Image 1 (cartoon, rainbow, N blue to C red):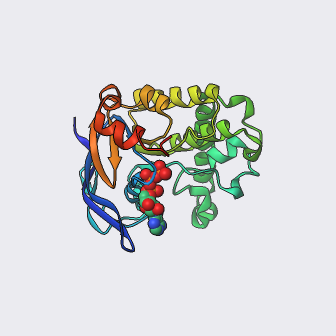
Image 2: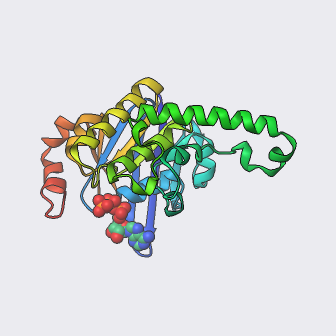
Length: 257
Ligand SMILES: Nc1ncnc2c1ncn2[C@@H]1O[C@H](COP(=O)(O)OP(=O)(O)OP(=O)(O)O)[C@@H](O)[C@H]1O
C-alpha cells in the first residue's frame, strides 16, 4: 500500500506552548485511519495543519506524493482533500438538495463569463449537478427530506448532509473531525455505514478524529494514538485498547471521553 498522506516531523507552537512535537505518521491509501488521544493532545491542531487551515512551524505534509506543506485549504480542496464543515448559517435557508448542488468547485454557473457566453454549457452542468445531488441524497438516505430546509434537519441528518457534500466533489481523502458528537445511535449507524460504503465503493481514504470509541472500533484500522503532540502508538483498536501506556494516557485521564 502507498501513502495518501505523510506527516513528517511536524512541529507547531502557539506562543510558547508546543502543541505538536516532532509528529510523524502515514495514512495509507484506501484506509479509514482513526485518531484518538486525551483532550488537548493536539488532534485538532494536526488535523487543521493537514487540512491547510493553520500553518505548521517546521516539517512537511505530503499528499499523494506531492509536498503540499502550508498550502491553503482551497488549494488542497482542488487536489482532492476535503474536511467536513458544519453547514454554514447562510446555507441553512436552502434545501438539503440545494446544499449538495452548491458544492462542486469551479461551478460553471457561478462564472459570469460562462453564464453569458456559454449558457448551454452552464445548463448542462446544472443538470448534471442536480442528477448527482439526487444520487447522493438517495445514497445517504435523506431522499425523504431533500426539499426540507437544511436548517430544519436534525443534528444527525445535518452530519449526513455534510458527508453527502464531500461526495459531490469526488474527493480522494476526507478528514472527519468528531462527526459523531451529538448524533443519536440510529443516525450514527447511518453515518458509519455511509463512511464504510464511501470507502469501499468509491475508494475514499478517511482520517477520523473521534472520541466515540464504538465508532472508532467499527470504522478504523489502524488507529493512531496522539499524546502530547506526537504519536504514542499506532495499531489495531483491540491492541490499542489493551496497551497499558494508552490506558494510562488516554483512558486513565480524568477528562478523557
Ligand atoms: N489557536 C490556538 N491558540 C493557542 N493555543 C491553542 C490554539 N489551538 C489549540 N491550542 C492549544 O493546543 C493544545 C492542543 O489543542 P487541540 O485542540 O489540538 O487538542 P485536541 O487533542 O484536539 O483536544 P480535544 O480532544 O479536547 O478536542 C491545547 O492545549 C489547546 O489549548
